[in-house]
Length: 470
Image (cartoon, rainbow, N blue to C red; front, side, top):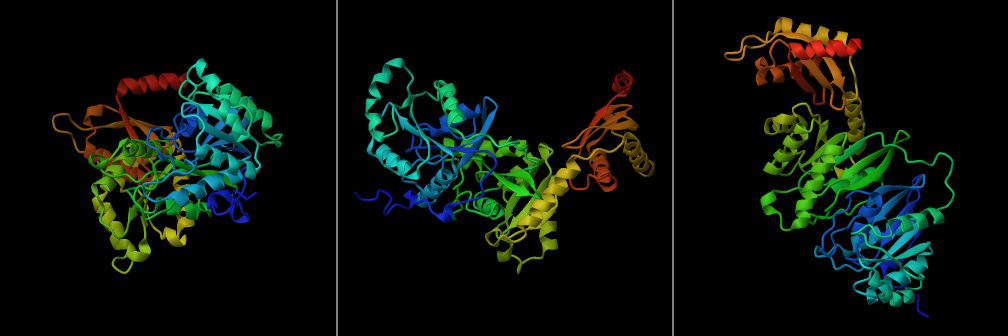
């Protein structure tokens, strides 16, 4: 009998594919295109992680979500469709990502489409999975009614026993799947609970600036597909890595372009996910291409990062291609001029293809993360406020009189949030707020992170004092 693995790179699992195991067991979802793998991931994790769209081949990279059932934690991984004919000719890279996922997985969920019945490509997937020797649960998805159950007999021929009828759309079979996973996972090692990431870093930017290459350099492996083809990454992909013994997460996002140029729903969802990644990140890396001018897309992302009060590093990638045409000082001045809303953000220069300065950027991100979590005492804060206002009185707002700061206190971190009790909040002009924010960055340990200022009147100050006494 011929070896079914011969001639197909997807079917070979070699030592080169081995990567460092994480502390949590991994369960990979595998199947041909359009059988509902992404919907299944979203159902089991309990939130929308993977993009769900009728277009075949939406998922390319490995999409990971943390799942828990009966005090057991595991990582669930969505993969691309086996056998997809990718419109951007990325078949080999998609297959490599599937192979990596199966190599790392402890268990497999093999998904077929109950509506379509057994197809030749399902049989090919089954032949491969048998050779991988992983415990596998066969799931017949899209069983939205009981009368479909009698039509599942052909799937026995795949060699994985009776399929479990499920419906990701209607959450049918969710508990049964999780029960099977818990039953077949090896005994949990002592302390093998999920480690809360110390820092979440989102990489955002327009198309083809090198985000995926940066992620792979950081992870030390081909964790996501990197290609010269614009728009390769479509979803937001969480990649865990270790720094000084602590677990961190880097979030690779789809390249953003003008909404007017979105070709389909996939690009709309990708844009939305990029913004969502900014909101849930602790630090954002805004990657720009040193060989091209800053565009409206870059400016939009910069404004959104500033509006969300996120610490940010302006990462100038592909610096090896531009350093002969500009100095780092000149380019930094250029960025400050075209992206004024991120004037607090440090600038870093990298060459991701050579892994140059990648670790320095992560060290800088850790420093910003620490700044954003810093608290200063009320006494120190008010001493700084007094020093600033003694030498620079607020400019009176037309028709409103002079602003007087009575008292200030820090009420939160990430971002550092400061409430200023004043005689009249309406007198706080935008120019004075910008000035004060700059001076607070100079005099407090918030030098390179956004600060949120909240102005409140005398009555709010009285209520605040009464609350503190209670």
